[in-house]
Structure formats: structure tokens, C-alpha cells
Amino acid sequence: MSADTRPISPGRFAAALKDLSISMLHLKVLEIRNSIAHLQYSNDQLKPFAEGSATPFSGADADADAGTHSPDQDCIDAIKENEVVIDRMAERIALIRAEVEERGMSWTEFQSKEEAEAAAAERAKAERQINGHGGGEGQRTHSAWTDGTFQTGTILGGQVHMDRQPAPPAAGRGNNGGGTLNDEELRRAMEERMRDLADDDDDGDDHGMHL
Image (tube, rainbow, N blue to C red; front, top):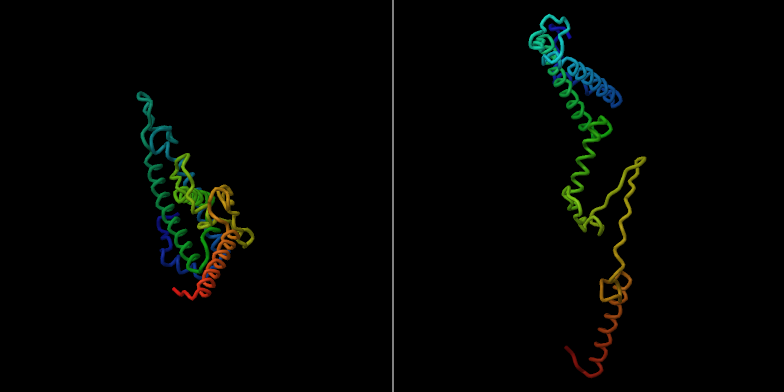
């Protein structure tokens, strides 16, 4: 880039995005990321010369006695300039994201592979914390994930597919040791109780006693 060329300001760039379609925004993001990747690769190649750990291109600054090399100032300047451009391009990606979300769309489909992996790692970490694992081994999963309070699923082809919930343990139910009742057993118990109350009322009426 020429020193006389002034980059477009963030405000003008954001305004220009308003006229672009979603597909064009996709292409713009890919273009910017490709440019960033090239600049980062260039910096990786220049770094040894900027640090003096590799022989300069001319070889004129080599210190034969000490076996070291002087940092190449041109490489140092080039790295700094590339970093400025990388920061500016990252800012443009942030502006594109703001435009996408302002249109009511998700940024997920615009994410790079690295961003998607980082987001997945954050979700997994949050899930472990909610489950009560906290990153440790051997800790029990919070009951909210097994009693139906929290449910998980996936989106495939635009449809939500909920994960199957594990069945509650059968031991201790019904008449097995006085455990909790299932829905059918609870219904029958309530019906029997209502009949008992009705019989009590009938007996009271026959003897002329009222409570």
C-alpha cells in the first residue's frame, strides 16, 4: 500500500455495507480474512530477521565474531505496518458482524473455523459448569439435566431435534419399598382417596352428624 493512499474510514466502510447483500458480505469477510492470513504469514517470515536470529538478506550486518546478527530495521518496520493493517481489517470484520446482526441474522454462519471451534469450546465449558462438573472428574451431573428441567438438542435442516431424556430409575417406585409413585399409580391413589372421603360423608349423614 502506498504511503499516500489513505484507507477508507470505519464510518464510510460501515455505510457502504448497507448496500451489500448477505452473499456479498460473506465474500467480503472471506476476502478480509484471506488478507489477514497473508499478512500474518509475512510477519512470521520476517520475525527471525527482525529479531536478529537469522542472517539478513544482504548479510552485511552479520557479526562474525559473536555469531549473531543485528536486527533488520526494514523487517521491523514492515512487521509494524502489517500489524496496523491487520488491526484495521479486524475492525472491518467487527463492522460487518454488526451489520449482519442488525439485519436480524446470526453471525454463526460467518464464523471462521477457528472462531467456531473457540465458540464450541466455550459452550462445552459452560455446560460442564452448569452440570456441576466444573472441569473436574468424578463429580455428579446436576439433576436438572436428567429430570427434564434443562433439555438439549440440535438443529438439522432448519428443524429442531431434541435429545432423548434418560428414563428415571425404576427402583423404589410404586409398591416397591414405599418409593415415589408414577402418574398412573398417583391417579389411582387419588381416586381411592376421593371414594373414601365420599363414603365418610355418607356415613355421617346416616347418623345425623355433621362437622
